[in-house]
Length: 465
Ligand SMILES: Nc1ncnc2c1ncn2[C@@H]1O[C@H](COP(=O)(O)OP(=O)(O)O)[C@@H](O)[C@H]1O
Ligand SMILES: C[C@@](O)(CCOP(=O)(O)OP(=O)(O)O)CC(=O)O
Image (cartoon, rainbow, N blue to C red; front, side):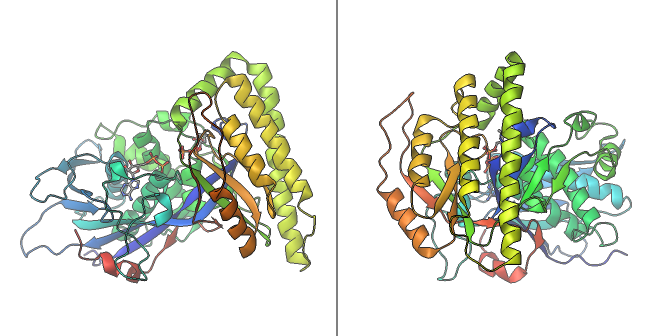
């Protein structure tokens, strides 16, 4: 007889991709990714069913948003095809979503299927799942239920929420997968606190996120959701191509083999990423926007057509990115060995950032993809001259989304930075784009990845549908 299921909650951090954008799509290069102290939590709880009634239903709610309830029926299929999931759209409640949430649906299919391979003779019980996200993922103001509320009511539907680009889908899929595995599986079958548990979680979340996303990303965001700040080398994309589609013959067994197997060549180096004690990251949201997949396509095409030139720039940039993580680690280690102030000790860091930016601009100009477009150059140059700002870059794919700055971790430096940004005047429109208000997002770097959470956090959100 299986042990009774107990409520389980897991959270994962947001990400900022500081160096190695585009390069990381190729295993020859690495990415420097920082986790941020904004998290997405997933809570899984048993639901009471009346004696004798056996239903197979999982309800997923994202109660901070309107119309964000998804109800799923599920069943085990023959021929090792795994668990099939059907969205139930009974519509008896106004808040039931009429739209699909591909990230939730896919994470459910993949995690239940994996669970079914480990518990072949057990019925998977119904459950209720809640998702709660920290404010920083969205720029909608939101309202508090009480003065100390951690999770705000955003008062909009997910489709109308304005994302700040911190990797909501990766933190969602990873915390969701971890919470579902932790809820249904006994510790001896899967333990998220162990290295092996994390490795399986990483592989499973990569496969499911990649499926939901259309297999375009390098997977850096999932790695960060699990391991926190790290140096990341991606897995070979061919690993995923042999997996049959969900619901087809052999899917379950092949999924189990894939996620538990040792063919994964992902490399995660936690020790290669550190933040010196006197510094912190500041993320600024630029009120504009860019489409990552379109930019990726164009950059890859440019690389294909100009292999030699591009390899030259990318090899130099890889060296520069290694110099950046090397300098951060050197400064952080120096902090551990002495308690002195750095004085002008950030000069080398500042120069490395500058020279990496110049290579990124070369890439922008040659590919004609606005990775660091002139509007962002002007903003970064402006910020880099402010007191206590060491330098900054356009994170990830770049474009008009955001900038990230290395800043001295002092209150007066941050408040002056905020003042200066409030009065910042961007140039008029260039190439059809004009950046708007620049705001500081309330986050900073965090080293820790996935973690179990205390259920008390969610009391306020216990009953709201
Ligand atoms: N709080 C949430 N609850 C439910 N689904 C969410 C939530 N936040 C994000 N998502 C899902 O993730 C999608 C956004 O993912 P994506 O476009 O990849 O943005 P990001 O760059 O933040 O990862 C949303 O359309 C939705 O499906
Ligand atoms: C281009 C990339 O290498 C980096 C993109 O980083 P972003 O942080 O810009 O990503 P999104 O939040 O998904 O838009 C693509 C990748 O590695 O997947």
